[in-house]
Length: 280
Ligand code: FDM
Ligand code: MG
Image 1 (tube, helix red, strand yellow):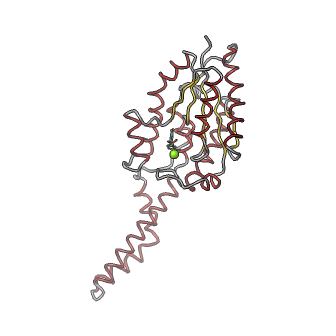
Image 2: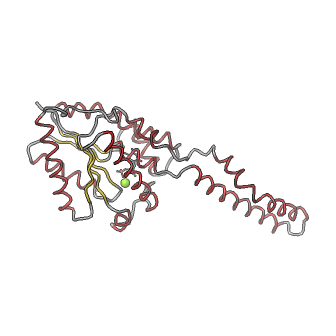
Image 3: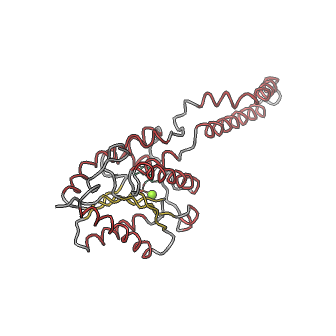
């Protein structure tokens, strides 16, 4: 019996990804194939619950820690995915390691963030000084305070910036981002649904979750382009962009055409049809 194919759909929030995943599974099943969806993050596991709480801003985690949890969440599901594939089931993943890379790599770099933080702390310091000045307007102390702070102002940002390097929310290197997923089952194809972040944001209000802002989505989009380049270099022919700007039906037809070709290739067996390993 031929193995099932591993198909991944990726895209920004509101790109219609989850709808397309459902429609694709319906097509696969209607064509007489066994198919199942695997959504990442899988919020049902205990790691998934930690991720869920982070995404809903109910908890804070170091950027590295949450990145590794997302990867661990895939690893804990990898054996089941392989088992399904071996049993001839086609597995369709709603997001995979590529979201993992793009969303973490899109986080604001250390330099920018620290300067922002420094500016914030400086403005807080100024407020504080102003408050002190007002409340003790008649005292000489306040005047001294204010002047010493004013004199310190030019050197405060670098000082605060050094201090802020202990902040855990730093930008993370791209290579670091892709490393933890090394060796996961390699998707036979990944369809990246493209939609400009502006169009996506007009499709309806973003939800409440972390990352659901135009600014973040724009940076994530840039990182996805780098992911596509990485795939072209490391696993040629396994990353395809599909425009998601048309109607749901039009996108559905494009997705199904591409997936059908891949599924048939895998089913035919032969060279290159065995399951690969990501980044290996
Ligand atoms: N996300 C998703 C990541 O940051 N890393 C990952 O590895 C994965 C799989 O989680 F904003 C982000 C992408 C998105 C959020 O995903 C939740 P859904 O698809 O909106 O549930
Ligand atoms: Mg979402």
